[in-house]
Image (cartoon, rainbow, N blue to C red; front, side, top):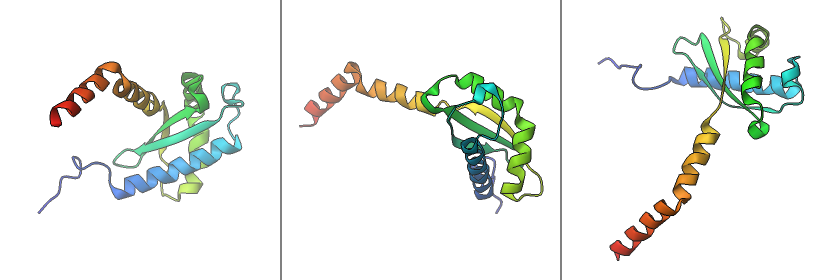
Length: 135
C-alpha cells in the first residue's frame, strides 16, 4: 500500500527541521547579530518556520513586537538572507543549509479579526437566539 505524502501535510522531519531553524533564528535575533538600521532596537518574534518538502527552503514568518514597521523589518531580513543562512547552518546540523525567506506573520491579525467578528452584536444576537430555541 502506498501513501500519498503530498496531501497529508508536512512530515515529522520537516516539522523538526522547521523548529530547529525557528530556534536558531530566534536566538540570532535575541543576540542582535544582524547589523541593519531597520532592525536596530526591534524585538522580533518567529512564530513559525515552514520547510519545503525537500528541506531546501525555510519560510520564516516573523513579527516585530507591537507589529510596527513589519514590512520594513522583513525587507531588511531578506536583504541579509545569506548572512542568516551562514549563521543558521551550523546550529541545525544538516548536510545542506536551507535558504531562509522571511515573511510577515499575519496569524495575529487574522486571530484578532476572527475574535472581533465573534464579539460583534450580530453574532452575539445569533448566539442568543440559538440559546432561546434549545430550551
